[in-house]
Length: 207
Ligand code: TMP
Image (cartoon, rainbow, N blue to C red; front, side):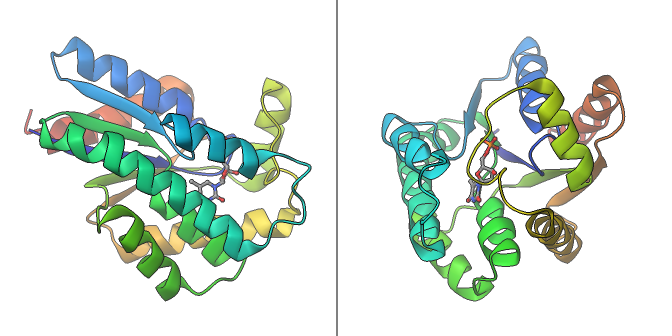
């Protein structure tokens, strides 16, 4: 049975860790799983990621930004996600199209309907079956990222106000489609978050 699961949340919400833990758990139970990430996940997508995250590219126009994320997504769907789903795999993506709605739509103020149309063009209308939103405040997310000392990208450098808009956007998206979205309070310990995620996924897999 194929299933397409995405993880969304602000930077520092722990979604990458949670996606990896879920992947390991599903594999242990004998499922075939593909774990991927956005932007990236393919050779072309990873090259586009470098352009998007490069802190020297501060002059990047918001529309150019949308199209680059969408180009990376189109390649990922065509080359990886759609073939895997057709082969019956469970696909887990660390970010997907909702990131565009949250960051470029709610964050940058681009029109949501246009972003949805561009996204549908890029993906052939493919949306996840299940999306986990790992909720932390922008302040907490920033604090965690700083302590972890990981990659510091162009979007991390945005003002706090931008990150608050992104969070409000995610919450609006999640509330608008409760059949797909599950909001998880991500300030809990890692194991507790993972436990909730596994319970929901097990339910979807009919276990
Ligand atoms: P991450 O790989 O650490 O999650 O970082 C990806 C960054 O790119 C993050 O700041 C969110 C941003 N992003 C968008 O703004 N729009 C998108 O469509 C995607 C996929 C990511």
